[in-house]
Image 1 (tube, rainbow, N blue to C red):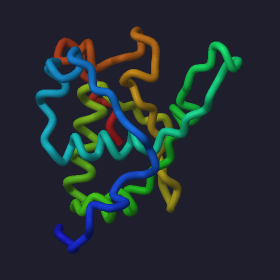
Image 2: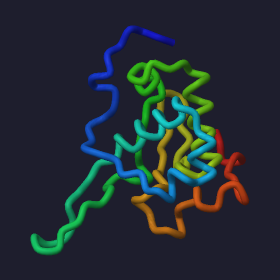
Image 3: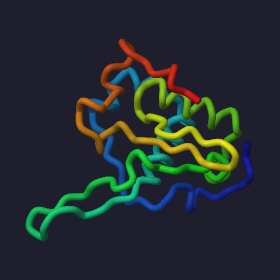
Length: 140
């Protein structure tokens, strides 16, 4: 689906994403296609950040992780992908453990997602357990 879009404004507002060597060398990451990686980055870009702590010891935390509401229609339009490609990408990201569905949307209510990379404790990072475990059964 190519709708002659420009890449400007393709993602939500975000400054950067750090991909660790551990992720880049993982089985979970290396099974992803380019479009699936684009969807992953789009979901990451929808995280909202809050500065926590004092001036001396401040740190940034994802304020809406677990409550990332995403309109697949809007995402498909911004990324220039088809409905089938978008659905397949989300299912793959859930299966390999990079994201988790926290609310299944219906009747014009968006799905909600939780990012399971970098912004959650190590024990919640499911992608590290893939392919020994997968979460395909959690796909909508």
